[in-house]
Amino acid sequence: MRLLGSMILAATCTLGAVRVWAQDAPYCAAGEAVDWQPVLVPLSQQLGDTMGQPLECPHPAGDSDDIVQQTSTGLAIVRATTGAPTFTDGSTRWALIGSELVSWTDVSLDPPSAPIACAQQPLRGFGLVFQSQPEASQLVGCPTLGEVAERVVVQRFEHGWMLWQARRDTVPPTIYALFDDSQKYIRFDDTYTPGTDPLSSSASPPAGLVEPTGGFGKIWREAGALSVRDRLGWATATESSGDGAVETFQHGLMVYTPDPREIFVMAASTADRPPQVAQVWRAYVDTFID
Image (cartoon, rainbow, N blue to C red; front, side, top):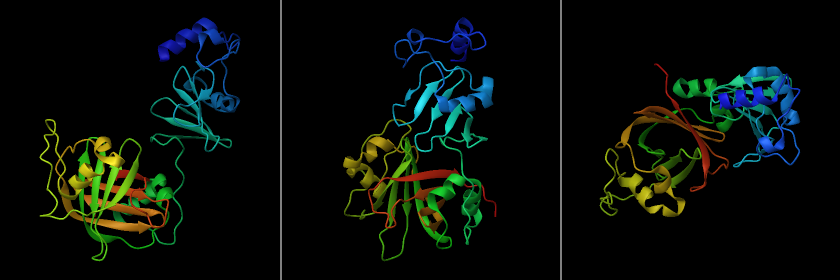
């Protein structure tokens, strides 16, 4: 990509005096010169060679309302949700927020926000994630109850996770199917009944993979309308259970699993968190040392 960009620029531009015309670049109308989307100009002036030169005319992204332009060094984006001009070289992202140039390295298309201020702060591993991962705190808001010890079960799949959370005696345990493809999860009540429901289907997974069993297996097999099996794939290991922890927040919860040591952030856009409604999740390695 960079070699191609250098060749095009060398052949067509001398200090920006000569432009690439429509017949040489994608997404351009007849006779249209390749140039920056106007809102991207201040960012290109700040980044210079890091941002390179546009190789195509501005056009809508295929999977969103963002406006994008391939450049000689990466991809420029005008975010539809904020209007912010951004650029990524594949590992680092930059954006102009007002007149301030910011950069970040996670997968988010927008720069992380500062952690929100709360009267009560989560502690231990939840607290570390809350303070060091602004996206997590923005997703769930402030804590509403303290951390509670609960038994949890987790299983890794080819394309996501399944997570089981014990709850109060009057509430059925909860199973979450977390999909890598969309970073969304779906919540189910655990209705598996030992001795009544089959433990598994006796399917033959590919070598090195595992069929989920019990409550995970029941949802994996039977929630066909929600494509749980197709989206998760086979399990990559057997399920692991242990003494975990859960903390409830204004807009979701955090769940700690001891093996592997992960903290799952489960955002919820509705207060009652109805089952089978897709919601946003994130996972962070637990680095807290007691």
